[in-house]
Structure formats: structure tokens, C-alpha cells
Length: 420
Image 1: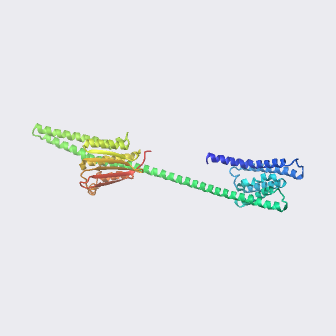
Image 2: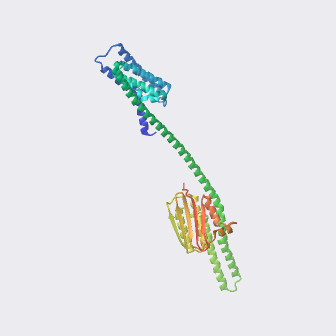
Image 3: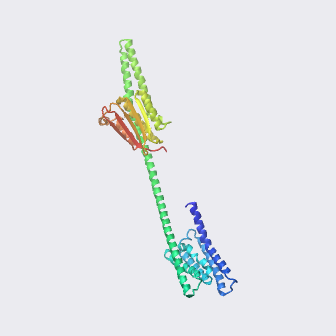
């Protein structure tokens, strides 16, 4: 409930509490002022007694309401008794003097709160009888003209009050419907929040599994790199040194020593690159776009291949596991391009598409048959199957399009999970 609603509620409560006192006071003042001299008849003594009884009744009802907070405005048997007694006092006072009809009008204010639904129209009609009698000239009625006037006024008062009651009932129904709708929306929001919390927990579990599975994938990738680069380099060094040992002259030995030295430097560079790629050091100080940009630039300088990097969409700060996965995929794709593609140009694009991230690596190299490569790597090695598995660890997917002589297009798309 807003502050304005609470203020309206408080003012309405004050009207119900002090309104009967005020209307009774207006009736007393007008009744006394309308007489030149205070009438000492039995009727006026009775009127004062009735006024005292009305005040006592109102004080008693006020005490009941204060003792039952939140229930004083709910129809009940006590409220019905209070309404009937107040109407009877108002009718008797109006019979004595028509100005007391002001007090009788209090029945219009709270019939819907004091009386059960089936009795509300009867209560309004009873109050209208008292008011119409006063408007027709006072009770009791005399003569045909006064009776006709009373009937017309009663019909007008009853009709007006019934219309107001109908409108009030419709508004109350709409209020109940709005309240029910708000409650349903709150339940829906609660369920949605629970679903979001469960989804976040599933994402966390998924990323944990990806981290654990990534350890095994890294071991396989590193083993493949050591075998393909460092181990082959060391084998070459050993072969060159064996030639040196059996060289017939110094010039031949020097030539093979230089080759062994070149192989050693190359192997050292590959070892450093493997260690650098073992953990995504590039993501420690940069976001994924900056890390990819540096990776592509360094790869291009090392291989001499023209390499370009592009970012599209609104850049988001990705979860560490998602960013590391995409960086690993880009590194592996570039490594494969350097080894096998013989490309003259490579393009890497990172696209933020609202609820997912897309990584594209394209080259104009010699291409290959993806199915044939997959059959060859099915029994081991990191390869395309390992890259697909890496993407699937974070609920993503990897697709490869290539053909001999047509270049290669590799595309990985993963859900956009923001950094917490």
C-alpha cells in the first residue's frame, strides 16, 4: 500500500469515527435554532434522552472498533446490531424534529461495512425512509399531498443510493480483482525468481564441470603439442648431434651444430608458447576482446600470415570459464591453421548476440575434409573433437565448414553468461 493509499484509508477511518457525532451535532443545533424558545414538552425531553443514547451508542461502538483492529470494518452480527440501533434512534429523533434526519444519513456511509451483503439494500432503504420523511415535511405524514411527496422523495433517495451502492460494489469487485491479480503476479515473480536462481545454480554447476573437464583436455592438448613440436625438435637435435659425432671434417660438424642450435631455439620457443597457453594469462588483466586481439596479432607476427580481428555487438564482461573457453578455441584454431592450412589470410570475429557469443575463425588455406579428419582423430589427440568437447562443456557447440582447396571456417557459439 502506498503512502497516498494509507492517507486516504486514515481519512476514511476518521470520517467513520467522527462523522456520526458531527451529523448528530448538526441536527441538534438546527433543531434548537428552529424553535423560538426551547420546548419543554415531553417530546423534547425524550429527544435529549435519545441524543444521549445516540452518543453512548457511538462511544460503545468506537470502543468495540478499537478493541478489534482490522475487524471493525468487516460485516458482523455486532455491526448489524449497531446499525439497527442507530437507525432506530435516528428515526425516533427525526419523528420529533425533521432536522435530525442529518443523523439518519449516517446509514448511507457505512451500510456496506456493517451489514451483510443480503441486508445492505434493506438498510439503505430504511435510512432513505427516514430522510425522505424529513424532506417531505416531517413525520408523521399528513394528507395525500405529503404522502405523494414522500413517495417521490423515497423513490429518488432509494434509487440514488442503490445506484451509488451498485457503483461502489463494482469498484470493490474491481479492487478485489486487482488485488488478486497483484497477488498472482507476486506469486509468478517469486516462481520466476526461483527459476532464475535454479538456472544460475545450473550454470554454476555447468561451469564447474567445464573447469574439471578442461583440466583433462589441457593435458591432452599439451601432450599433443609436446609430441608435435618439442619432442620432434628434440629428436631433430639428437639426429644433428649424432651427425656431428661422425662428421668427417670441421665444416660439416659446424653446419650440423648450427642446425641443432636452430632446432633448440625453435623448441624453446614452442615450449614457452605451450606454457603461456597452459593458463589463460591473457585474461588476467584484459577482457576477452582485448586478449583475442593480442593473441591474433602475436600469431600473425610469429607466422607472417595476415591476421585480422573484429568485434561486433555490445561487448559484455563474460564469465571467466566462458572467456577462457573461447580464448582456448581461438588459440587451438590458430595453431591448427599455422600447422596445416598454409593460409595467406586469417580472420577472427567475436560477436555478442544478446544471449549468446559467437566466435568465427576463417582462413583461405588449402582446406580439408572434416569427416576424414574426424575419423583420423577419433582414437586420440586434441583435434576437432577435443575442440567440440571444450565448447560443449559450457553448453556451446562447434561447427566446421571446409573442403579441399576452399579454406576453412570454424564457428563456436556459447551462451552469454556474464561475470558475477
